[in-house]
Image (tube, rainbow, N blue to C red; front, side, top):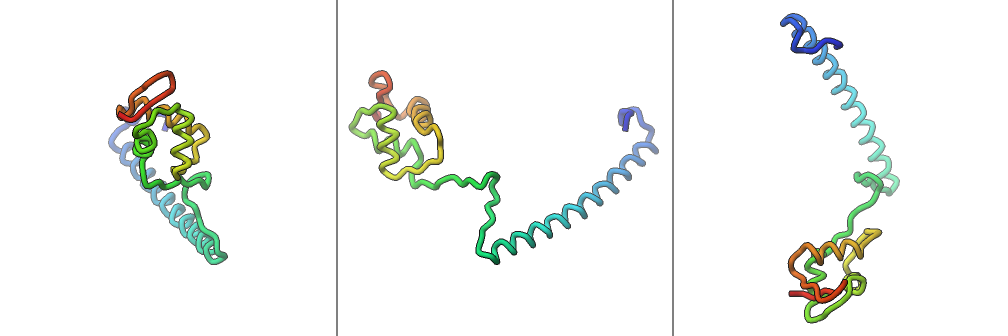
Length: 127
């Protein structure tokens, strides 16, 4: 509507409410039909041996037993390493990531977690 709802009479407001309720019902029915079609497509994909990844882009995040901070703590215990080296050690020990800039993620974790001590420029050890 072009006019503000605050300026409408009670009769006009009731008419607007009824109009919106009709639209809502139509949209709900449309939604139900689309969900049914999507479920049919999903069932057909699974019947053919495929899987439906519900996440956009099809990427899934790797599961790790340890958080990044825990993995860094274990890698730096009793050692002093540069950021690049500790990132490499953590990945060699099995930490999985899809990150294109994992070294940056490691650097942020080293700076912000409070569990690491900066020894020199770009070098850290566990506290």
